Image (cartoon, rainbow, N blue to C red; front, side, top):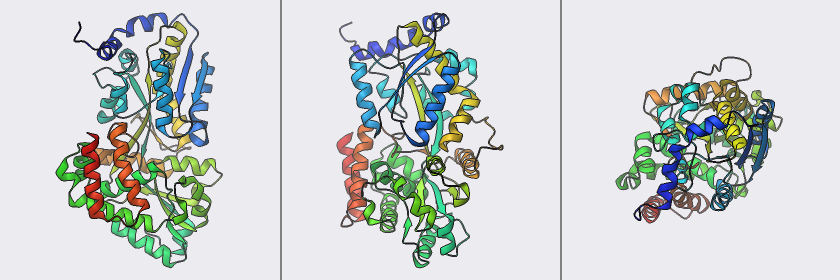
Length: 426
């Protein structure tokens, strides 16, 4: 017994929880304590709408948003877990699900997932992340591709362009035409750390999803130092040079007015930008959404999925709330509502996106995911903590952000720095 750590005991305890949870949950009024980073914009509107649905089902919704970066939300989550008071569920995703499940006991959701037939309609790689020890402990709610391309229709008009770029060469040609046509800044991205990560991951995955998987997802040393990574840094430099130098660390949303007006031309963003644009009062007619550039012309899908992890609680009302929340998250109608607010696509592959309320961009995103999976070109986002755990992600983004901000760093130097950062964070 002395050789068994408290952490492993806690992790192992999760599998013992399902039967009493489901039994006691039937008798209590559902209540749910939730931690997320979603407080404003389309994300805030979506989780508020989810909370209202929870209340319509007779539950008490207690959401405690922690605005800002994911790390700030994680700090609050860690503090509550260490105090013995975890929320009933919290926002968490990617490899962090496995890592955090070793810190405190989680709920075995297998029976609920089986009853909903959920596993049959979730992409296998995505399902794997949410059942790290073979049991479902978290549920994905929505999917984004972080390398969707948003084009300003007014900027396209200025450039006298009607062709959507497919390859990086097409992209670079269009950006130059926009510049020559009077578009002040062909790229409307922001300067936050996740945004810098997106620029790089979109460049590398678009150049070679095979190299991306080897370098970023498996951290292969030779791939990290390979020509594709160097080419990706060179492409990122072009993107940075076409941005407003005054953007600094600003969020991309500060540029949306200028983007729609045609003073800026293109954004590499996730589908959430659709939700933010519409929430700000702009129209779908103001912009075009297309898959990000890929040099082999087949869609590459940089997958980012938001999810909720469920933490063990002894209170019957919280257990009842967890059961209700799990059922809502897996409900096709709820996923439809959520994605139509945020601009994402549903996790469920059986949701019909042909009707009203869906944009052509969302339909294209769903089609791109299907094609990318078929061609083995769906990879996990590093900018949004899907490809690696938080510590490794932070080390890599440090290098990328410094490179974007400092033009004196060459692609050759950036490759060495990235490889060194990965080695140091292992």
